[in-house]
Length: 111
Image (cartoon, rainbow, N blue to C red; front, side, top):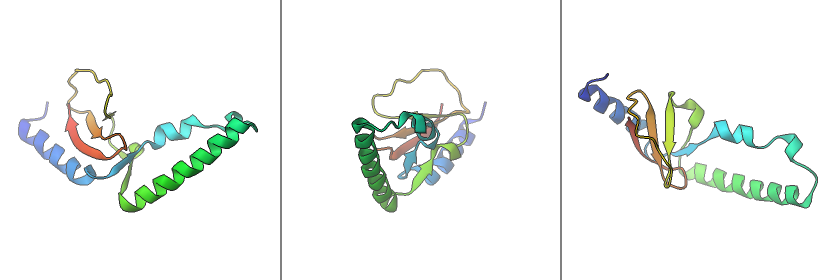
């Protein structure tokens, strides 16, 4: 188990790298939509329009706020957003990334 000083140094290092940036879940995003799901229906067309609008918004946000990919963070990692349920198990090697509802990183911890 790391000492308190080592833990504080590790948190400070990662907070300097990540706090204030937007976290993008590139792992889950790749798994959500497959070509088979994109049927030629009105719902699929609506979804495409919504996705394009969402992508434009993400591009605008990313031009203002730097984006960090979830896949680029050390494993194990746990993302904690408002309303997320979390277990109380202590795992000092697990990075906990606390975000707001828009994915903006607010805090880093190892617990």
